[in-house]
Length: 175
Image 1 (cartoon, rainbow, N blue to C red):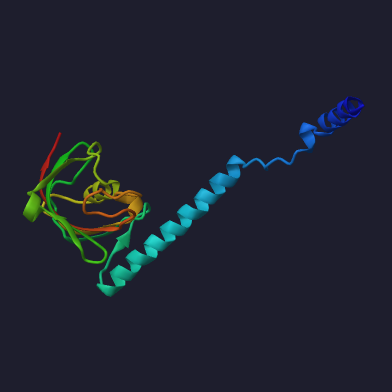
Image 2 (cartoon, rainbow, N blue to C red):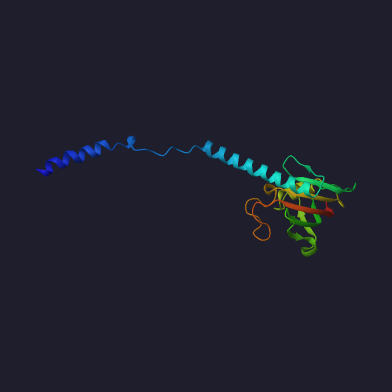
């Protein structure tokens, strides 16, 4: 007698468990993710800009800001050869963080060399060097997105660090 009742009860449960009635997680739309990432990026970019602005004000620097967000001041100008894409640029430098921590300097590593446009170096450094001429000196402040970005260099530059470069172009090899 029990078997008679088990079959209808079992069938009732199977029929009532319709896939449509199971609560589903709402699908995360691609646009929701994109919007969230854009908002986070905007927030971080604004925060970086404020940190750099504070540094500039504390040190009483006269700086300009490029469209990409590179802060720069070419404080010793010449009328010599201008840097262009494809040039090899030899330069002396001093690289530190906004808090004054010295990371690298050509005094310890030697004069640096970079091929503009294909170096793999920080984008902001290349953009800054492209504004210069042989013999000029400049100060650049690279926000993280123009420097080493989210991970740093895994040595002396922490993740999401703005960098302060003092640069002097020693030589431009024209190709």
